[in-house]
Image (cartoon, rainbow, N blue to C red; front, side, top):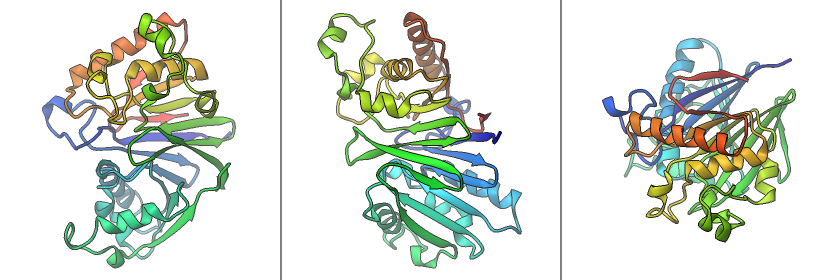
Length: 294
């Protein structure tokens, strides 16, 4: 059976937050890699992508690197690591950039942030071969891995991805304001402990995931002043995981204002909610450098 290795290179949301307050969970913005055999899949290109690139060049200094890049969306904290991704500068390497919009929007915005107004090296000066590919509406098979996507609730559009290989399923779902999709709002307003029902299509997309990596940026109290900002309460992410029968839940896209201790407290509340609903889900905080064998 083929093993999948998931590694977190950047777990922070909105803006990099280096410093002692964030040293355990990390300060780099979103980037997660998935290795299946020799194939490399990368979710998002925040500042964590630079760390991944350095690691790849150290591991494979003389070998060609091939990577499949998936972007949840193109807000700066999810693309700002791309100009610093060292493999992009070598002619030996090939990068496949996938676009769920089927409009080459991702490539155009990656190119745009490398205009001379913003960056000294032009996109056209990158030495690697960069190929844009549109994702199929249903599923796309890439080196034996079945990739699916679904649109999420987020300003400017955002997409979640699922990767299925040899009976294992990993879902990457960041920058999704789940709370705007709750189906039983009035019941949940009356009873905070009530399971928040999420859309059937979304639950089906996540169903049975061995690992769900999901944006749980806010506490319940914080979300009251952040409605419409595009991110979810961690407690609502737990409710999605419960409904979908998820095995492991990684709370991701940590708020830039949250110190490590704040993340710890948020996770404690999330684990209590899992127990409240009688589920058996391993909940943890996504942490830079953490690698999981799925």
